[in-house]
Length: 421
Image 1 (tube, rainbow, N blue to C red):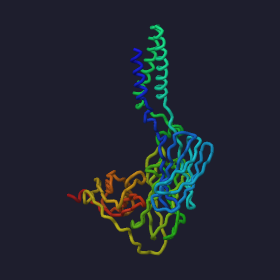
Image 2 (cartoon, rainbow, N blue to C red):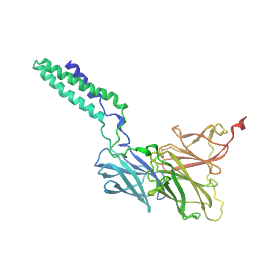
Image 3 (cartoon, one colour):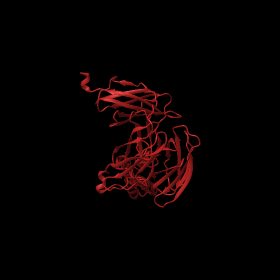
Image 4 (cartoon, one colour):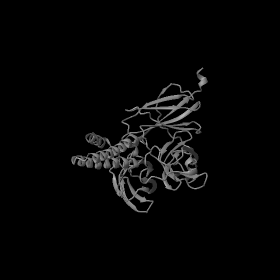
């Protein structure tokens, strides 16, 4: 009996390991795209495994930059303690190491080219679960009782030895049951996680109400201006300051001219609670359309739209040379999926967590769609999109090469299903 229990203990100790289900964001990297100082970069905050401990921050450049340095300031919301450093934007950045003293909410302040952004984030550290305590506690007790049983049996005291062996068996049984059940148990929140939402708020938060404006109110063609998006809660009227990162950004903003000749996909800076801003230039006058994709915590994704005018003399501005994608079917039908393929001009690297992005706008600007590459691999990009209605659509496929982001424009004419009869 004692030999059998010894074998069981050895096997459990060899096989026992903390369940992967405990990792609820703790230790994961935070990646936030930012359009700052005229460059498209992704700020990476490496996950930390302990506090006090190191916090490594790097800035990945997706466009050619020369000597772009980003000032870093990490502030703990809990006690106000601040640490500072500098990171240089590069394709393969060197990570700057700072030190954090506690878990919980923090703010990362970025400074570059006279611009400032404040990115909220949480320092999360994984903690052991109650199941782990039972597993290792049961094994520890079983080991003590097993040793006691061996010593008692050596002294020819059979009854106490059997009782100790039974206790050891009970400890091993508890540990074994918890090992089997642990993957099905709810994961423990990591240290520093946000408090659980309860009560009326547990039903989800309402969509943000957004206002799109420019500074100045009517930008001049060729001159820098600021596109500003103010977000408020429709229930309280307060600024919405609980955006969550989705596809590696707090918000994705697409700006197009009315004719589609101008296109920008940028990632605005959080400059104040409920305020996003990005600096831009327009190469032509006229009407411009702005679309912001964002998501509130405990809410769904949403699209905020707006428009603005750019002043200046009318001028003929050359458009980017369109590409010719491969469509399947060759004539897309409204309400049915269409496969869109095109070849990249070089080796593709992930940008915003994906190999490619396809943004589609109806000609009148009333509709905007955004889908991602299907994971084809290699230099071929493949998208699937369902056009909602017949008509002409303006489209832009985007992907990142080692040294730049490529935007490939094209148009798609979609027919109604009855046109095929």
